[in-house]
Picture 1 (cartoon, one colour):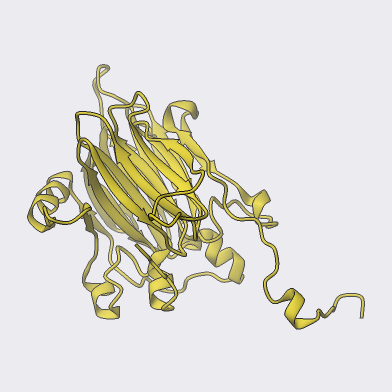
Picture 2 (cartoon, rainbow, N blue to C red):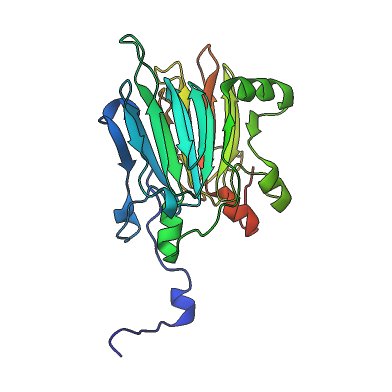
Amino acid sequence: MEYISSYEYESNVNPTLKTPPIASKNIRDVSDGITKINFSEYYNIPYPATSPNLLAHFIKLKSNQILVVPSAEKASSHFFYVIEGKGEITVDDQKFAFSKGDIFIAPVCEYLFIYNSGKEDNEKELQIYYINDSPLLNYLGSKPIAPTFKAALYSHEYLQSQLQLLSNPNNNRKGILLSNQDTEKIGTNTITPVLWALYNELPPHAKQRPHRHNSVALDLCIYSSGGGKVYTLISESLDAQGELVNPTKVEWNTSEMFITPPGLWHSHHNEGDENAYVLPIQDAGILLYQRILGIEF
């Protein structure tokens, strides 16, 4: 009887849980190799996690260096954005070449390794933003047993061309959601069954109005002119005019990730003279499938 317990319903139906923090981290501030962005202490769990369902990393490799991505078989979705450099990624018996600005996805696999193919001294180190859903699988005490989508590369050229082709200039937002045939069959139209990715352009002197959703966003600033002129405002509430009340300001800095917690209102602002780009990765794929994403503008 020491193990089990019970609670009165009405006063305990909404337990107080710590939400993911409003936090940021730049790849400039991490060491070579692979660095986990870990906030597991917020969730009272014994395994690394950036949000309850996702784990973000930064990867930095020198010329000719190889990294075996740990626990490739313990996550159902792997997502990579190439910040700098070029290289090759091997997923079991498949090999893909990539370069700056590309996105790569991989399902569960026996092994996954990354090679920095830059051989000249003047070539930049390989820098990658990497996210997987291992916290979700760890929470369930499970291992994925089979791939649910195919490994695929979204080239920088493809992303830019689709952004120009698909974006509606009359909309408040200029962005594209990335998808594939496997998630289109489900109906979520997300980049994997768990992960959702938005390639988003924020034009000069633009404001993208407040919105909120139940998913956690692990945003990567691809490019910002900096100087505090490009930023996100985050707040718990809106006033009668639809403006954020006492917001927290999160500046966009190139190659820096920041966390947007679930359920909070947030807007994006560019007071500079150049386009800014952000790449929010969310666990919205699984929330859409469960019909609980709850995105609201």
